[in-house]
Image 1 (cartoon, rainbow, N blue to C red):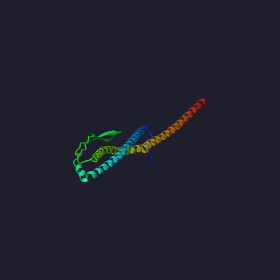
Image 2: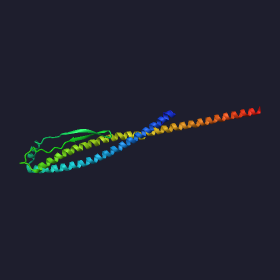
Image 3: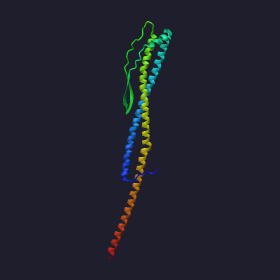
Image 4: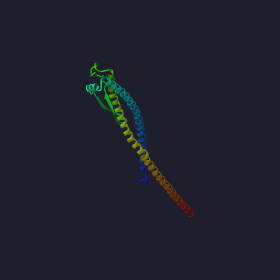
Length: 217
């Protein structure tokens, strides 16, 4: 590919400066990418642990609910659930991770307030409610982690494109420009050197001829 740039010292300086900036930019983006990847992997491990906890809580909750259904009857349990308030209070805030805004779900775990009598219920219903209550907060945590993973993955993808552009396009381009300009400038310097040497030789020959003519006189 032809290099469309004049082989001047000014352009050589500009190419060298651009190369230094491109290399520094690549180093910074590469460090950012590694930090983001490590952060994403750590959060992915946390999300996996939360998923396992949710699966465990749900299994225990449904097991307790099944026991309550058998002991009390499905209709009775179903009627009681309508009296349990739908208390979902949480706030979604943002924090910055290497310039990426990721969510933080803020919530307060309140004590469970009894909403049904204990005369016609049993401990299995209480256990089921407690487990489902815990699952809700685990789901909040999981949603925060999964959304963070998604945002970090998108940023890693963008950072990859920028580092690849610097590594495989910009940096090689400036290196090629520098090599091209240096070779032409060196060739020009050699030509100037030979030309100057030739001029000096002619001047020396003229001087010698003049001395010879003076001696003959």
